[in-house]
Image (cartoon, rainbow, N blue to C red):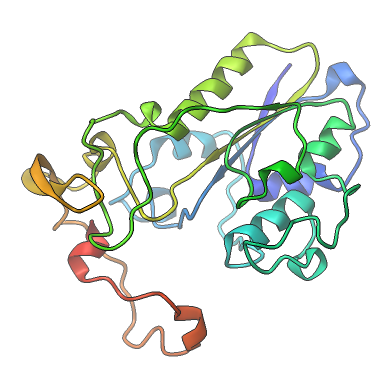
Length: 272
């Protein structure tokens, strides 16, 4: 069987709201990759300071949308919209705490359930809702142990994993590796595998990832734990990273409510 790798929008447009008419043996496998909070500030969108070679490889085999927007600027409402194919004003989900079936009901088929009813074996690896994972049914749900990287509050807003893990050794790297392993095992039926990778704040790169960018000729001392403790861990300097050209008073038209809880970072923290 051939395998199709789809973006969120492409997958919804192609599959979620129409029946799959091909015979079972002709149905393609489908892989869905979701990533938290990823902006367009990387090389494919014109920022050479942030190289993403794996994303570039995907682009070479698919279609890239340069004008696409989320349904709602908050986690659960946006994800519920993606999985259901319905706008937030239909789902009734406008915050992270509302059950995603509040308006849609117990019998509504979210994307993996819809595909399963059309002959697909479904597997979930990682995060796909914002605290509502048990409200969507899958044939298989992966579970891996944590990697010791915890959510961080306070300052600084960045830190480095002291264990110097590779990206594939982190929790979400393990999810990706486990999905790849199951793909390699083959399947008697077409499958829909979805992997959810979290890059959610607070941001916690491994040292390997940190050193893919920045200035290797200038090493800077890095905080390495949740208290921001500085130890003998050095990484590429970030002073040479170019920040976006933000117009003066660019945020003046943003309502105060939309900025609640947010505070501007100093320039050095933006670069970090």
